[in-house]
Amino acid sequence: MKKTLIKHGRRIGVVLLSSLLGRDWVYGLIGLLNKHVLGRPIKSVFLLYPANKKYTEAYVYHWYAKTMKWSPRLVGLLRQTSNWGLVFGISASDDDFLNKAEIENIKLLVRRLDRIKGLLRADQKTIAGILPSLLVSRGIIPADESVERKTTVAAVLQAIELVKEIEQMAVETPVIVLGGSGFIGSGLLEANPNNNFYPVDVGGKGYFGDLSEKFFSQPMIVLNLTKKGALSEYIPYLWPGVVVLNEVYPEPGKSEVAAIKEKGACCYHIAGVKGRAWPAFPRGYQGGIPCCASFLPEKEGDGSFEVIVRKM
Image (cartoon, rainbow, N blue to C red):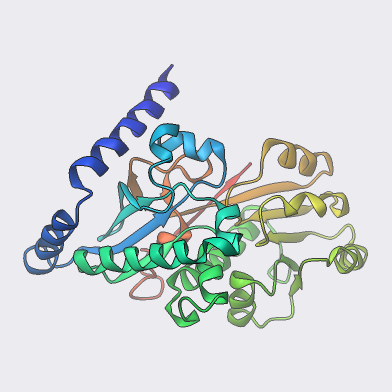
């Protein structure tokens, strides 16, 4: 009953928030206050979209979702230490983004986000899921504009060390990177040139099998940076002592986690970075803010950038 009330409260709140405040003149007024009165605490515009039906249901009613496929609606607020961001949502999905017929809608979406960012006098815009990598690969934005890549790489590196500490794994524990040449994976390998990272990409099950034979029975981390659903292809190669660390949106489902446990391995999910959101992010991202929506620390080790990992 409580979960149902929370779900309906979030849905109604999104409709009211967007209806009352989702106007350019309101964003402009907030921007003036942000710059001239408040000292620019609002630093970011963050766009999210549903990875599946359950995420859609967590935020909006189906009738409302139909009105916001490509039109960003204000759905919440987030904070990481003293930095604030406004959260926007659309109801388009990965399938829509991968459909080349939707390229003009994607370009219009990016222009709309840039417009909102300018009105709010914010410093950055960030986007969840696979969309940032698609924007770069299709030449819609340059790679050096992708804040999401930098923050996610920083969070993943921190998460690896945290999992090693929790599971009492050695510093030199091998890390198999699923999606190693991808948008985040390539940035991760650039940031960590040490030879204990082993990239595996699409069609690389054979190579993964070779690595499994090489490290069999040893502790090992399998870092999932590939696309949703692909993790299940590699589960048959696992053994007791392997730790799966997931960064992919959405988090692994119950069947995937059960299959990992059957192999005697365990699974952690990177739930985000410590911060708060109103309403709170649902499901596997409760209690923090997504890595891609976060802010890098002004000074290394100042405590403002702390990753959250959860054992599933």
